[in-house]
Image 1: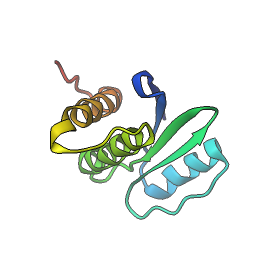
Image 2: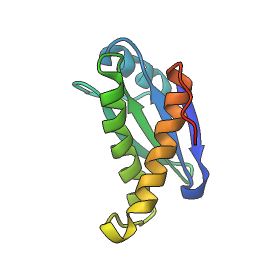
Image 3: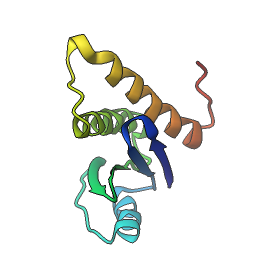
Image 4: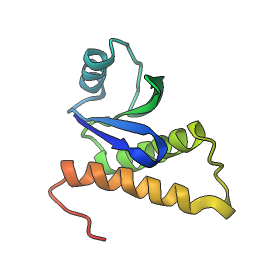
Length: 116
């Protein structure tokens, strides 16, 4: 499990990966005391203690595809929570935040470092 802050938006991301989505859901339940029903992978957001936290559950099968997909959800949840609209005129905020989340996770879980 990886937890990191997104300071600029007063948010946090908790990334959970295991062999199966069921195992991811077990870890999620231990951490949050809440149950979740996911089929392949998922991202959900909670607001507590003045901060939005996005939980991303991504099992090993199709890791990169699911990670990319869930990073998009996490990015949109965070931006929506702080009132940043997503549009062609304002897509740089989305692109930079999505890259930040993806890079944090990929650098930890894949034996590869994304360079600037």
